[in-house]
Image (cartoon, rainbow, N blue to C red; front, side, top):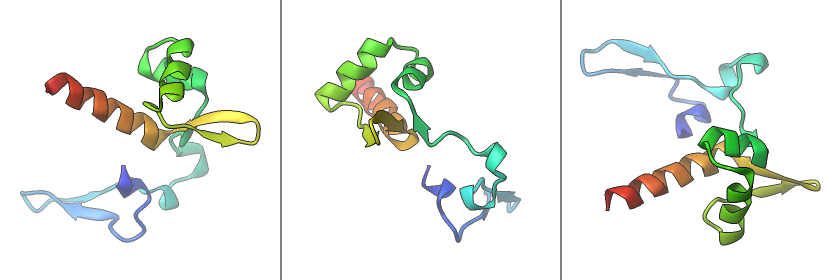
Length: 92
């Protein structure tokens, strides 16, 4: 996901030498941006789990979240890290 924020490496070549343009937040139209912050409800829908489970994961520290004003939000990065962690756990 780091590539979304990278200002310098917008293109890359694959093994065959073909050039590919990587998505980059700074070059995208605002209407095309993927969500960066999710409400607990949105995170629950994205993860296909219940809202109470999201709050349980937040309370346990398993799913990182932030406060924006009085609202709780989960970053896209925190969701990706949570999924990677449960994948590693399942593979162990």
